[in-house]
Amino acid sequence: MEKRWGKKWALICLFLFNWARNVSSLSVTVSDMECVYEYVLYEGDTISGNFVVVDHDIFWSSDHPGIDFTVTSPGGNTVHSLKGTSGDKIEFKAPRSGMYKFCFHNPYSTPETIAFYIHAGHIPTDHDLAKDEHLNPINVKIAELREALESVTAEQKYLKARDTRHRHKVNETEIQ
Image (cartoon, rainbow, N blue to C red; front, side, top):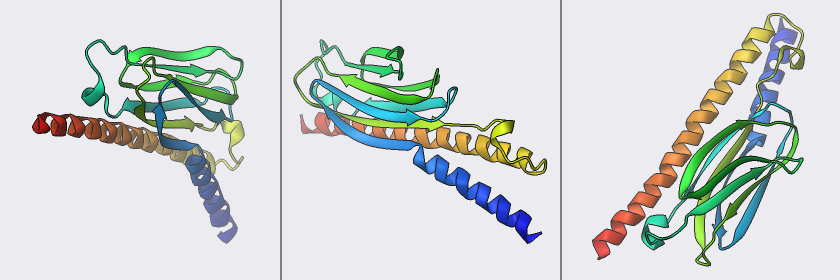
C-alpha cells in the first residue's frame, strides 16, 4: 500500500514540476523588434498566452499603427500573426516540438512596455502515463485540471495587465 502511494506522489510531483517549468511571464520594452523564445517538448502541445501594451492609451495617438506580433515554429513557418494591436490572447496547437519564437515589432521609435505571458501545456496520452490502470484516469484528470487552472491564471494575468493600462489612462485623464 505504501509503495502505491509513493508512486502516486512521485507522479503528482512530476506533473507539478512539469507545469511550473512550462510557464513564462515577463515584461519587455519594445522599441523596434524584440523576440522571446520558448521550447515546446511535444508536437500537438497547446501553446497559450496573452500580451498587453501597458501604456498605449497614454502615449498612442489615433494614427499609431499598433504592435505587430508573430509566432514562428522551429521550421521557420509563421504559426500565429497579429498586426496593429494593443494586446490579445493566443492559443494554438504546436505543429512540431522545438524552439518557438514570439516576436513583437513596434513600428514607432517610442519604446513600449508589453506585459507578456506564455504557457506550453501538455496533456499526456495513455502511452505517456504509468501503466497502472488505476492511475490513468487520475493522471488524465490531474493534467486536465492543471490546464484549466493554467487558463484561469492566464486570464487573471491578462486582466491585471489591462487593469494597469486602464489605471494609467484614468490617472492621465485626472492630471489634465
